[in-house]
View 1: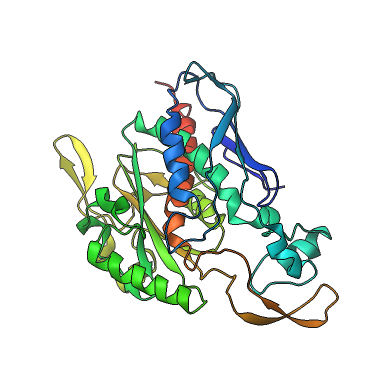
View 2 (view 1 turned 30 degrees about the vertical axis):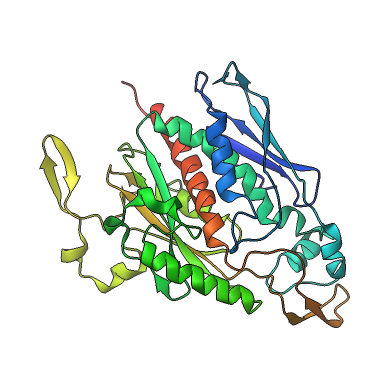
Length: 358
């Protein structure tokens, strides 16, 4: 049913936006991993709604409970079950779309596929589900931290406002502002744009850039499980994502091969590349350089304006935006992108450990 992701480090999420709770079951986490619950909560706090004037004002503490798989602060090797209760549901905000399809939402496709849908906030198609991914991704981050892997995502673009290249930025400043852009001058412009769009009762899209440092060489599998292919699948599974590119991406087509090729050199006994247009991945396998990629998010589909549509009977109708929604999703998407990247890298790390004899 498409509710699970991963091979060895595998998650299954459950729950709906306006149900009693959402949650995740994580299977395959090695035993003996120290589980920092405060860190998990911090990651959830970065994603939760109501954290600033440029995010939805739904109030969810996103406090989690671990039901299994942890004993005396360490993983036991058995499935880890985490539940996050929903607190601030306002299902009445969605009664007007019980039989009407909102433009660019999953309403019509869910109805057509299943013959029934939970219209309260989109049910299973709601971005509320991503909180469960962030909880599991936090555990993946803890596993990868033991290997020195660092994963940092940030908002690199909102509309036409674009931040400098990541290599020129101090990624430790990502959390210094509400838009999560490490360049202060750019962040100020982004915040002003999002706030203006919100006042116009509209929405706008943007790009989240993610950088993975200190990745071991050798992560990724031929032929269909290439590392970049799985990263792309993971990112495209996030709500509102419309595009994924890694390394030089689409800009690479403007270059000649003589400039685009990443030449190897010996850096004190370690094989490195002088440039990194490959984005840290060659042949679908990590080469030890920075893995970096961009994830494009569309404008949030729910706008506070009347729009033309049809109902479930095909009758022309209109729908008015109601409820509490983000004018721009990218600030809250940053920890989601990091979480999905961590889940991919953690899974491939475990697969790498059994790929050859010592």
